[in-house]
Image 1 (cartoon, rainbow, N blue to C red):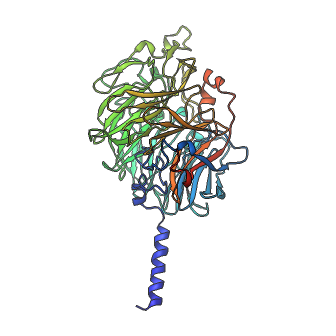
Image 2 (image 1 turned 120 degrees about the horizontal axis):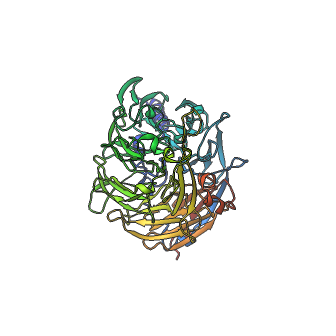
Image 3 (image 1 turned 180 degrees about the vertical axis):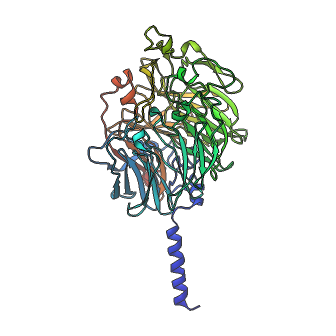
Length: 588
């Protein structure tokens, strides 16, 4: 072969390699590949931990802004995205289903995509978007009208756009997709509208459906366009036809445990909230009123969509304690492979990774009123007097007994992701100490209308704080330290090998804490409330940290007395990027 032919072949091979873009191997190594971030969670196990230690406890005080990027326009609202970084470009999503590609060296916009949302979308909890996914040459993200879109990484051009569900029936989508072995895996949103929670897997190249798995019993899954198996057993835990509008939205997306080849998704509240309508308000034989698989975590086979195992955190759910909070795969100090999840119901659970079996549960917020504890099987010990009353027992049949429940329906922890530190072995959990007056009301299902059957008012439990960042030892459930914040915490958390814990507050403060003591080591005022997710990476020998600032989310919309307490906070839409300059890396 002559030199010219060799050069041509080499050029073709090089072009083919470049065209391959992000591979499955890149996704596997995302946590250790510190110059890029190509998965939500900084690894599909969602540990949100970086092995970088250039930035550390001794020099974090030298962290300075490198550049800032405005999302522009009037479409601010809540900014909950996590940045992704690949090949010198940062990708973020914004409120109202927007995407931005930004030069990481300069902060200059490369391209922008704005989804054309139809009139009549029904997002329950603000017009947020929590980020995207990268695979091959595509960027994937979901839109508020319940679609999944693939965009060209370099140009932002649409490769394909597919419908997840019918937005007119109350469906939407806000989570970051998950990529496993060439499949784009999504959940759905809309639990307050009587939808049916589902997980879907698509061919990443074409967008064509491979499998679907509804998470409410009685519904049929599909595989390669044909019916596969029913979820659960029809009417085993649901009365009558209520399973048809059973809720269980998979709205936070999922994680992937490569060791067991398992997707782990959470399912939200059953619909309606009024548990008495679902035979869940009073004890029944066996698990008749448990309403599976709502308020549960599910282990799913990524190849077929079949359910491997389930763990229901709140059976007979009646307080809107969604079971969607992220499940993080980790290895404990004794070498056991575990899952951890901090549930909306106020308990921190540890499960076995092989089969999802219950290991332990401990409270991570104070004043839990709906249960007196968790038994040896992982089932809650209900305090029945603290269940919202049955409207049928009221004199007028219109409003059941009002009770005070803690935590509130926004949860001991809501969507905001916690972090696991491989350095300390602890979890760092953003939590809130609040409760609610809640009561049940009669309700009937109407397509596209709210399907709650309940009323509520959220109240702070303490005068001096609502938000509480807690360092939790998963082996014992012990809280090692706590940082109290006046307003509710709603931002993600990140830990690093440098001994740092990063998160933000609604008051706009971006903070770095000492992972062992909780001491505040550095902070920066971003100008708007932080409800986004921080990341860190290295570039040209320097360590960078980014977070988006922009107040919004569920609290100002649903927060009752708490919303009034924080109504002075300004909206925004500004991506801040900080760095530790080389010349300061060794400075104290």
